[in-house]
Amino acid sequence: MRRFLAGLACFFVPGFFLAAQATEVEVEAIPQDTLVEAVIGVAEFRYLPAAGGPPGGGVSAQGAQAPAPFLGATLARIFREKIAEITIHEIGGQERADYSRSIVAAQRAAVLKKIDELHGSRDALFFSGAAVPDGAKQDSLAEEIEVLQERLGFLSRLDVADVEIIGEKKLTLLSSATGMTEGLLPPVLDPQSAAAAAKADYILWGTLKDDTGGLLTLSVSLYAARQNKTVFSGSASGAVDQLERLADGVFFRLASSLTGRPWASLDIETNPSYTYIYVDGVLQGIGNTRLAYVRPGTYHLSFYSDGYEVLEQDVTLENESRQSLRFALAPVFLDPVLLQTFPTGADVYFGALKKGVTPLLLPLGETPDILSISLEGYKSRVLPSTSEDLSATHLLPRDVFSWDDLIQAKRAGFYRSLGVTILTVPLVVFLYGAYQNEAFGFIQYTGRGGYDYDQALEMQNDTNMLRYAYLGSLFLFGSLVINTIQNLMDYIQTGEESQKFPAGRNAQSKKEESQ
Image 1 (spheres, rainbow, N blue to C red):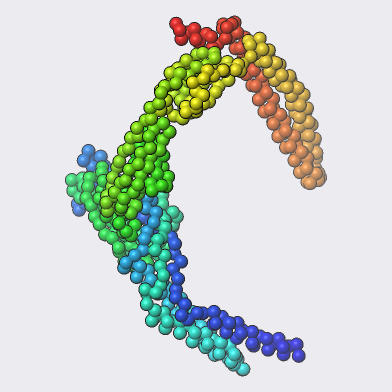
Image 2: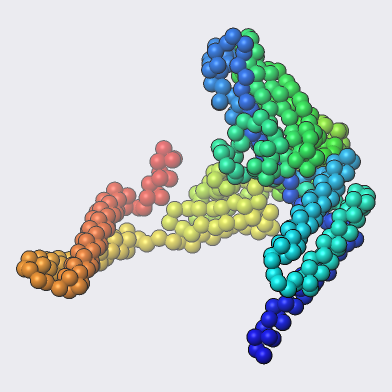
């Protein structure tokens, strides 16, 4: 009875599983676009030497020879750096239709592959030679094949306009692939195969032909794997020593294919350099910033910097325009303030720039928002330049010892370090003796025959441990000796300075400045 129930379960369970699997296919479910990132690979440009010329490379106007691999790889790296500024690729127009067709084609290929697998399973079941045919399993396979064929018919009748496409793809440079050097693919002959091997959505490739007279002709193509076609082709000519200009001549037109929409760029430079730059109310940078490959149109720029008037301006960017603008903010001039300290003669700094010594007349509105006051022998103070209490006399409390207190502190530090160093000597001697005894015992034990290997291994481990401990103590002792010598030199130097400058080092420096 038990065997009968087990056989009955083996007969019905596979058929039930296949039937349940068949019901998972939604015949009229429209395929979905899940691609949020478009990967682009940049290949080294293939070098073509001039007819009848040496294959080694081109010659610049100055007569310097440039090797061919260097030219192709350098140009590819220039293009890669320019592409890195484009972060979003928009899908629209004909490209959207091509994307939809590629998604539907991928679904059809998957369904056809599954149908072939099910046909193979059904044929294998039919020709298995079983005495009793597995009718339930055959019915399940036939039902699943029928569902998939209905799905295939629905995909054939589907209008590609019904497939929803994610309109903005994050454009990402290919960072790793077989045979890549510095993020570059090897020279490409067949972009379709290169895109499939690198699993890239776009491949930028081309050739670099060496013409006569030190000129180069650059041909660049952009292949789109989803569309299975070249979506951009361009060329430019230039001198060997002007590779950046040569790349600009092509990239200016290539950028429209990479962005998928009209674009414009704006470089912004400000004075002062610590100005906050806002574009349409969003902080974009400080001092210098760049709006790279944004949509053409009018943008509202706002500039803020402490001590300067707020500047606002609208800038209109035309299609495929590259502009560079410099904005200078007007300082806010306030009434000067007399900064005084007690004692006088304190140094006043704006950041790392020294402005003078107190008493000092401060021209507010031309300085950063933070100033510091320092005087040797006294505690420093930090004040905002817009403080209402800036004109008050600022008391600087003393922050140093007298020469006697300072010499006593240096002497105590030297004696303390010397005592610790002396106390370390017994530890070094003890560890050295323990290490020597353990090493001697190990040699004596292994010198005679018939010793226990495990015991010898344990003795060797103990010997090594003591050796490392001895070396560590020796390093510690050496460090303490160096520290003691440094404390001694500091103690001696302090004593010499106390004799040389009895009134204090700061008083001596002020005397030298007055002279």
